[in-house]
Image 1 (tube, one colour):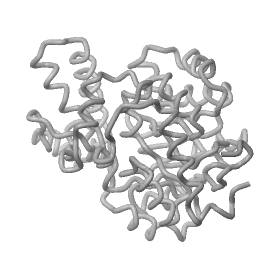
Image 2 (spheres, rainbow, N blue to C red):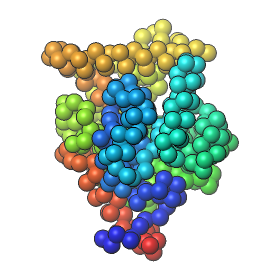
Image 3 (cartoon, rainbow, N blue to C red):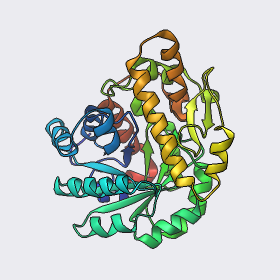
Image 4 (tube, rainbow, N blue to C red):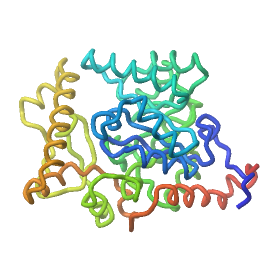
Length: 339
């Protein structure tokens, strides 16, 4: 392939990348080496600051600078901005400032009102895309000034939506914002389908966990390789909202009754914060304890989407990204847009 060729969509223009593919931010899986490898492959790779600092032990600025020693390609930043702890939101605000100071200009916001992020990022000609699961939240994001929408469908890993890939596009295309398909993309076939539907790009997570650069436990990677889409189930127990996981014998779908009531009350943001904290503590404890029973229990936290069906081995994130990206050159939609 000629090095001067390029696929152009609104996502590639906004993120400054070769291919309209995002390696999504993942807690706890977004270690610096994975972020850099996916970026090096030509896609948009998003760092996750909570993972970088609390899981992988980096000072945020030093972690960003370390990633830049591994790749000279642009990276993005994920800002989880749900209401809750004022201390956390203040920290996220500081982190966003640091990311901007370090030259990051592509941001993905999740679980909150992104108006203040848009205001700050747009001041330096940056771009903000926002995670949404339905038209209500898409319009809220549009009103806040976001530049694009990450459309989380019912095949996603992590937090998932209620609607199919095609249904979300039909629901949102008239908003005239770049739409990114998030969920169910693991191979060239699903990628081609999403782009033919009309999306400006895709976001992938599960496929990039089963990579050589991801430093998550090998058990997790192997579980993804071995799983089929019928093994993927959703649970509210980790964060208070539906999240996709690989089913294990320790799987439970719902929280205890008191938490279920809290999640339906005006204290829902506090309840979600407590669930997230509890999940974080348990993950840290289980990762340090190698006893067989605890190792098995840890599998209840193996988040993955239905794209596991198409993941058949562990490869380099750079190779995966480039192979998928270059497969787009064969699509009729792009043959006349290659420059």
